Image (cartoon, rainbow, N blue to C red; front, side, top):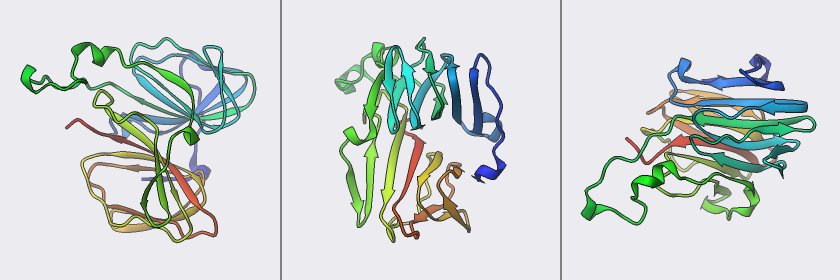
Length: 235
């Protein structure tokens, strides 16, 4: 599914104040997560949620427990977090929310240092991080990824940014069990979804269900960048 900004519908979510949401995908579509863009005005408030939540600041500045988080900053909150998100002025934030899937039980003699039952309930939330604090990793000529969440099996989803120099592309058509939510942040190019090809540009949102064939190439005059979610480390 490709959604372009001219189709976006805005509506407040429960307990939001001076803020509204563009819901891009949710379980109503068959997804196992919800992704939306929260748009804050002055004195905006977004309440805590009952599931785990990831935030990425697209524009402006938000406040989290007295700490300020600006553009390209991000935060993660585990299940049970009571942290409220506020904004003194206009801001836009990408939000991903997902019920947590605990790790399966593993026999004691196969456990690693990460396999402690209490860890499923004690993933620490964090904020104040900026995407550029994370080292970029090359995936080939002109293609870089920044991994925003720890590569730790306690986390049941991943969020990355991927940046393509003009002319760079994924090295293969992918098809896999993970589903994706993808928000174009900058530039543009061509996205293959299934057996169709779509021009995409900054502001577009793409949902990819499990096993959807997918490929991207950046064919504009400037680098292309997107924020991408995937479920992982569970089956």
